[in-house]
Length: 167
Image (tube, rainbow, N blue to C red):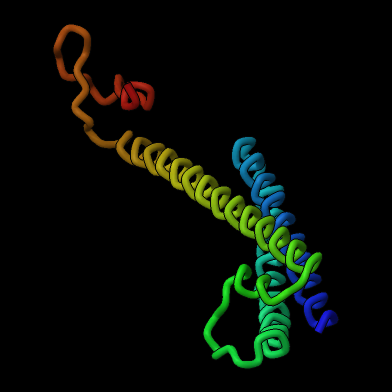
């Protein structure tokens, strides 16, 4: 039984490391966005995809270990999903404490990843909005945008400039 719980704890520790690595990459992506470092952003996006795939594959390993531990620790328990606290109640110390600490740390790491994803998404939307505005300004420079001179007369075609369109 202890061996099965150790496998679960190892799986949780590995998943925690994956989540922390992902959070570090997301932090770096935000910095790359701030600096408009496209090459670094592309490399970080590839790293992010690799980490996400690893997390997905690792989740299978973790789920298998948890199901095995549940069968051994709680054989009469129906196949419903149990929380980490419920699983920890079936363990003795120090395994109980280790499980609760690891799941708490994993929860915090996952929340950090979610927060960083939200921030990165907001920054990306904001940047796309700015680019959209710039493209709209550029596309209207050749058309009559209804500018008037300081004396109130409509400007001629030669007097229209991109700078005027922005103002």
